[in-house]
Image (cartoon, rainbow over all chains, first blue to last red; front, side, top):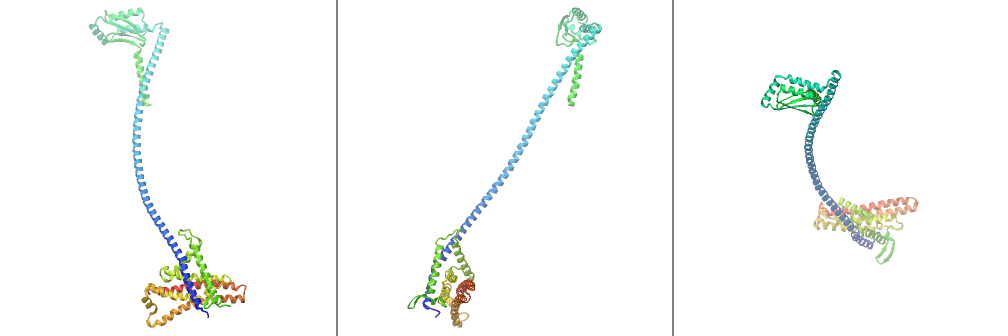
Length: 257
Length: 222
């Protein structure tokens, strides 16, 4: 017979035992392990989602801070730009002021130099003219320059114009015994002194006392000095005119520069 | 030549007989339980798992998916029974490649025992899920109470067909291999043995799926 009842029953029991054993050793542990893994993965996913959410919040905060920093940076840049602009204006003003000061200083120096140059020119010219005139007079007329100056001055005293005469007269009335001072850049000889004294007494005042002085800083010439007026003849007039012309030319050139 | 392993008797006293069917069944049981114990004693819940655990998870998940697909229900209540049917039949058939081994499923007593288990599992699961009256009405009095005798015959015939189908396929495979071994011992037995492995696996699948279909029919409302 193909079916053995004992074997059938035994196999049923065997199968039921196998079901129980496999349930205990296979299905239950494997199912629990898979469930545990699934729960673990779910927890990890939840944690990841939570971290992602935190990261989103952090990202938002970061972006906000970045925007704030950007705004602050713009503000700082604007502030710096304004400060730089103000500093620029201030430095420009200081530079302009400094330039103006330097320009004025330079201008003053230039005027001073120009004046010195004019004075030096005049002095040199005086010396040269004096020397030349003296030499020419000596060579040509066997005459002394100083004597000729005194002579010319005496001649001038005898040919005073009306205005000078009027001034002299009024001064003499006020103080008839006054001192007349004769200043010259050279020593006057005794003869010329006498002639000068004579001319003064005749033309200005008979009671006048004449004093002679020699001045080193005096330009070649002679001068009569009374209280209220003076009569002079020297190279200063010509040289002053030359100095004026020179200064004028220099001033024109300076303006051109 | 023995038609079934029942005929290979190792020990007998009265009706108590220890034959090849029972012995090889114990062998398969021991193999399955020992293998499961060895793998599941150190299970990992992390993503790094051993190859054995991976294999068992694939088998369990695959069985569960098939049950869910067939029954449209959660597989947990049925996986122990149906899964054990599939694994026992499949391993019993696959081990036929081992020389000297006789598959227990080649015994009509074994297939009948399994079919009887299914025969009783169907009402147990049905009544557990739906209650006795509802199960009885749906399963035996449909479409009309006059069909009750035919329904009862149908249930029995299902059981008989399950057992005979499995027995016939396994026994025929063994017989064909034995016959070919005597006729053409060099080449054809290997091909037939390989075919036998495939057939054995398919038969395990068919037995388990049909069992699940019968159980699902008893546990669903419609």
